[in-house]
Structures are given as C-alpha cells and as structure tokens.
Amino acid sequence: MAKKPKILAFAGSLREHSYNKRVLKTAIEGAKREGAEVTFLDLKDYPMPIYDEDDHKQHGFDENALRFQEILSAHDGLLIASPEYNGSLPGGLKNALDWASRPSDKFKMGEVFRGKVAAIITASPGSFGGIRCLVHLRGILSVLGINVLPSEIAVSFVNKMFDGADDAMTDERMKNLLENLGASLAEMLRKTHGEIEVVSDTSS
Image (cartoon, rainbow, N blue to C red; front, side):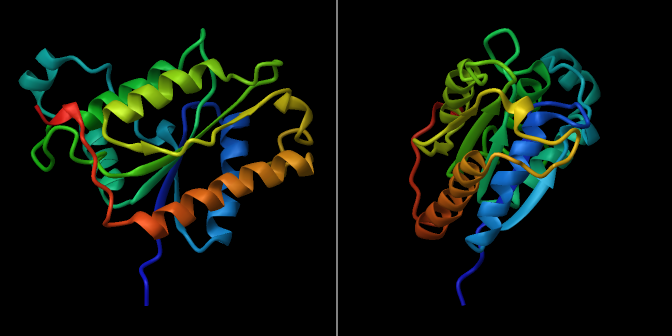
C-alpha cells in the first residue's frame, strides 16, 4: 500500500483568530480529502529569538528551532498561508525559516527543506489579498530547495468570508478554490515523492 503524503501546514501570523490560519484550515480539508496526512503547526508554540550567528555559536542551536527542524524533516510537503506585512512576509515566519535552514547537531544546512513541495496562500481584508508577500515567500522557498506549486491563492476581502471568529468559510467559491489547492498539493506529492531532484545553492 502506498504511503500517504505527509504535509506540514502553518501560517505566518501568530494571532489566535488570524484569517490566514482560517483559510489554511480550509485548504487542509482539501489535502485530507485527497488522502494526505496533515499536521497543523502554530508558530506561536515555537518562539525563537531573532537569528544571530554569534548567539548561535555562543549558546548553541535554539531548542524550538530544532523542534521545528525535526517536524519539517518528518514531512514531504508544506502548506503555508502568510499575511502581508508592509509588502512582504512577517518577520516571525522569515525568522523561523532562517533558523530551520541553518546547520544544527541533527541536520546539515538546508537539509530539512530540500526536495519538498509547497503550496502558498495569503489573505487580507484589502482588495489585493496580500498578494505582494507571495512573491517574496515563493522566492525564499525556492532558494531553500523547495518546489512551489505554480498555483497560488490570494484571498481578497477575507473579513467578509467568515462569520465572526468561526473557522468555517462562508464563501463557497473561495472555499472550493482553497480545498482544491490543498488537494493539488497532496496529488503532486503522491506523484513525485521520492522522485524530486532539486538544485539548490544552500548546500555550499
């Protein structure tokens, strides 16, 4: 029997009722429908200091960053939803990716990312849906050796698509788009797992 693709899902926002966490959960349902095993991770549970190579050398690798590396290593793909902060991704998300890319006692530089496949989403109450952050996020993930699906979703006017703090999306069209993106990631992982060859400059 074929192994189920394993997807790690997390949002760039730390806010409890973040819209990006909620659209992410919608996409997760699509990935599960396609047969994937999905782990939802809240970055708020893994606080990390701002990466500083001097501190790294003096105090060792951050414990939460190592836990994050271990979880990343155990999954085949990533499903990421990020808000747009000043035209880019939030500092907390970038910092977590920076830490995870560094060498630790368990992993070589960039090892936990290479060969993975990712799908990316953003959401905003504004008319652009946070789309500017996806360009930066795609570029960072690509440099890390991650294959990012060509399809991406920017959810505009997301505040009108939920009833209060409820996680259930009320906009059926967008709900279907998000679920289909999650399903596409699971399908791609099933086709390519173990067959992806990636050229990355993080191994130098």
